[in-house]
Length: 92
Image (cartoon, rainbow, N blue to C red; front, side, top):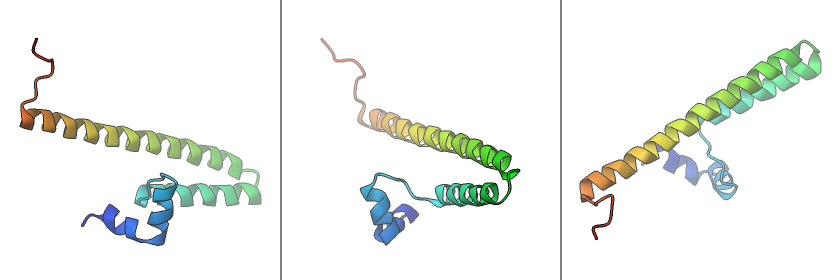
């Protein structure tokens, strides 16, 4: 069993799957980081800059995680094509 399978069995995993939200340690960390920055921004006006920096960091990490997942899917498809020896173009 993978960590994702174990996470899907929990209540948080079930809710995340229902709303099509991927739940892992990266997203948990980014959410907590942004909540802490928001609390700091509410407490002190200087926290607005930190909030903007953390939101930018979160967007950057989200982009990297999405690209990594797309690359993994592409690699799986390429391996499947190579294993099955499926022609890329139909033979006429």
